[in-house]
Image (cartoon, rainbow, N blue to C red; front, side, top):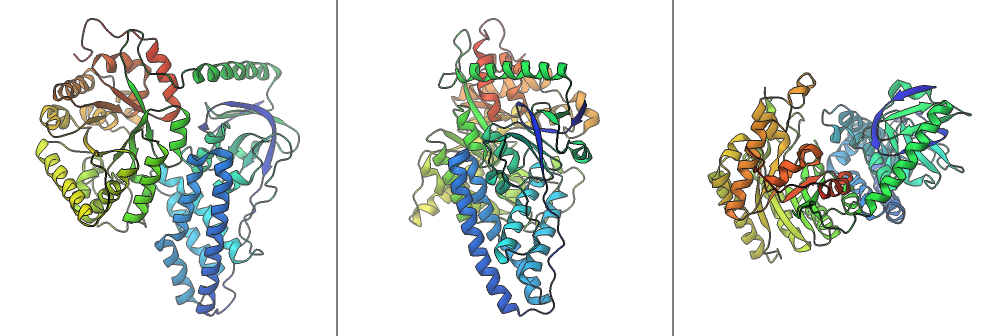
Length: 554
């Protein structure tokens, strides 16, 4: 027996035989001498059209098999395929180097794959899989005989644990996943679209096994996949098999128990009402939020629409926000305005290297420096507002005067859209993200200007305690339940109540069971957590008695 450690990507346990599918890493397409650019560009246009058609077909199949929410991944693939930066790289190689269309696509795809793979931000790094998928698709549409990293043996005929060097979304959909017990990969992350699809299908998944991938059994052999802990146990002993069989039975009972909480109001044992919302990091997570009975989206991180080389247009953003609001079916959706990764270089921004980017030109500060960027996003949001209940959340605001100016500017954009004949909702709310000690201490002033508060515990904790939350050496000092942090949260909540506006807590602390009683006693009305936590939080809150002495904040 051997235990291999990877990264947990989709919870659950599976036991069964292994099927290792190889993705053939063949040689790169050759330029094949001097090509006529006009002919290659024509071939590229035809292949692009065919690739878009095929991805649309995959999208439609995915809608049937994993639901519309998770299937949005493939709509994003079409946008990435159409990305002007990607297309320019391909055309430049064809026109200037007289390369074949195959070689130009291979070269551009490889550069972008490597760029995404080397990013520090985990979510952006996971986009490398999407780039790989798109490049392969376009290469195959150019020439079905092209050595384009195609897959062999995509369909499982009997139940097995599917093991891949690197999964890509289209392969996951092509596979007969009624036979897939679990997913295991050598490379990849928990935020990849392949991992999201695995979660959408309810399949346990462990990604990023690295060099240990070679230790998976070929041919005969059995494994246990624990997607919650991120481990794969090769050739388990009878005792280990019995242990995990018991765990699987208990987990099945737990899921059945949690299912009973769907459709229920979230209420403490002594009648304190709270609303559970979902944090959304991508379009693919909307369906997951709905499946876990979230009452809305309390924090949509809009950065997922932006890549280092492509700033989405107003129309592109409008389409995404409209679809998001429509899918949420009238539930409250709070979209945080752009807060780009300060450690990533964006081709459309004039960025300077900063010694302390977490406290530098980021978030709304960056947006106010780049008004066109901010204007495009706000216009797209306002236009999409007619499709649901939209709230616009402004992060990194420290005082009422700054927020007042931002609010007036947003209102002026709303008037501009009306003059253009665009329809917008009159019920768009505009809120403040309380995530710095200054914002918390200015909460009474901010509450007079804002429609709601969202308390971001991640940044609030690191700034209050002067602890970099990304520094592993300081992990033991990063503590959202520190008395100073709790006092600031309670102070901000009190200011919101006095002003008669709702207050939500997002960030990791929102899914910390040990903080629930404090939040409810402090008068927090909304919690926004990752979708898989929603039903468990509902159950845990139902067990609490929170009324009594103390306000939970001092």
